[in-house]
Image 1 (cartoon, rainbow, N blue to C red):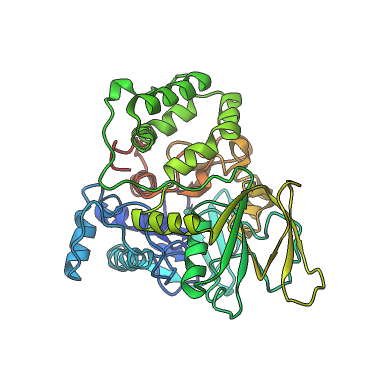
Image 2 (image 1 turned 90 degrees about the vertical axis):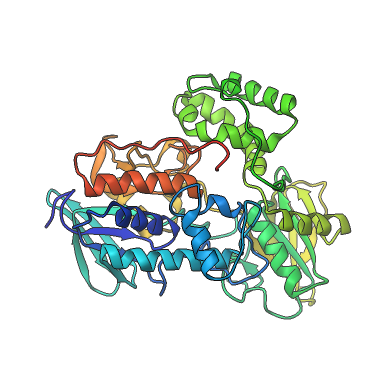
Length: 461
């Protein structure tokens, strides 16, 4: 069995994070280690995020920020040009098109690196002093020196309310193909008011033009809409620095927003420093920001494309989509004979609703210790990983190495993307994943590397 730094590399997951890792390994040009990617989908690249065929689903950031080769975007510009597509900084691609781009990148880089794509799932993952044993559910076994978890964040397996989970009117996963194609959908309640809610609402209206939608969350916050062009640049000396205290950080950001009267510019200029600032805050300061300010940051940070924002505004203005500030407490069949669910809200001032569908758009469960992901559960049970700060993800160091029960790095186990939440503040978007993939690729191919993640560019995130 190979040791870490030697022998095969197993990548668990074949979506965007795995594609960026493959690109970095191919660009390095020194790969001599076999790479096995465990991904049940036929195509590497799109993953769940970019597999939606719905034409109303657009990327939430403009084209210039999405290329695998960096913020100049030459690789993506060339790919689009080959297809006769002219795109500038204000072009927001269909998500399916970006998935096609990632699939082409993965195919191109897989040939250069020499990838063995196993269309399977990991059944068991075990480590000993000699390395990793990766058992797949097709009965095969791979002996690996290093394992990279590039799975994204496990989805919330059930709606966060009391609801009959075996009822076809309760949609736990809104990305299930064809889930909104059924006839007779006139009234829908959506749990959550973030970007997934926006996607669900647009898909429903596209298929059922007269549908009435209620979306509910505790604060009722809805994503803002990106303005055209790249964000304005704020002078670096005016931005908060790592080492600032939590209370001062909040006041500093609020003052910037009031001074510049452009919250998008403030968020986009602070974001490249966010992880370094986050690491130096005390646990209590982090917890306060998560509890009090995180939702407000998110709606300014995770914005919609302008075209999507205009459609969302029209739905809200017409009343076809209503936002309520309350959790959904429960849903049940009242036995009224009309085929609808009775939906009850936690806030007694919010009237009950009846719905043909209750759709879970609440996003992933925050706590990985109760996720349904068998790989994560096995690694937690073995002590090879530990739940990270604030129970938001897994503990990881700046090189991307997973931390075990002794809070030292687990040999040969790497994390890229959303699993690093909590340890890092920003870890789910292309710029951060591109940097993480570069660091991990350098460490995998050059065992003596001391590469660590570095901030993304201001104005390119």
